[in-house]
Image 1 (cartoon, helix red, strand yellow):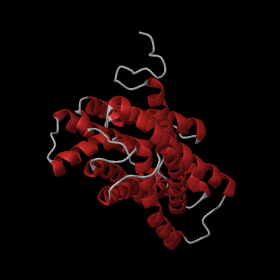
Image 2 (cartoon, helix red, strand yellow):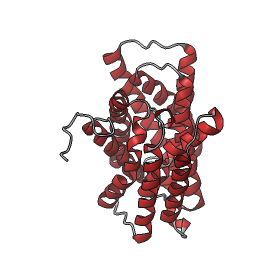
Image 3 (cartoon, rainbow, N blue to C red):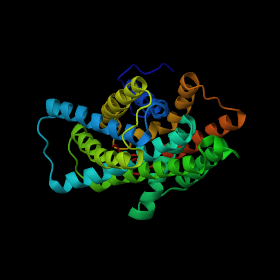
Image 4 (cartoon, rainbow, N blue to C red):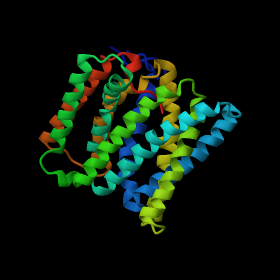
Length: 306
């Protein structure tokens, strides 16, 4: 069978080029994050990321969408879900990177999010949960544990693992929070609000915990910051919007299982991370479990856009 032309829907109903771009952009965040925390303290890096992302998204939203039209109730809901989705998720993950958690293991943990979101939706919202979703989550967790292996210190120790788990919960709970919003404005305006709400608490926390002497390598910190804010956050938001329009609110979940192998290749080529036979087996197991669970789930049970 031939490859569908760029811009045409793939077999899953998603346009190939934006889907591939979204996977690459999302996966690259697991490379830019560890690179960035080598040059700048983690909390200040993520705070500055969302300050810059909010400003860029605001400029684009004003230019392309006009004035913001949203009720106060919706704005509060968008902001709260955005703080969990962005502030908790990335604040915790950057702390995990700083502790030593590797890019591939981080992406594997996050790849469990669509299935964990479905489990949380079943527990808190009474949504239907399939056996395949439960089985896929169990298999995925087993694969992550296999990649983790017996030497926890290599993955950042207890601090790195705990922060990674908190980040996963932030991603899943923030995704679930998107359903609480109900009718939301244009994705650009929604992203502007969510980026903007996440930034101030992170900035205050960074100043309290890390102080003001936070930059170790200005050039590297600047490169990481611009990439994370403009490419990972704003461009990623735009690509996600294309996927949502093509495949519905759960579009991202249908490609989430591709993130770990793409991240593993990027981590190998850029960060020098290598995987042994055990890690490769765990990665394959996780990918298969998550792919089966997300492909077998109903659309409303999948990941929703940030």
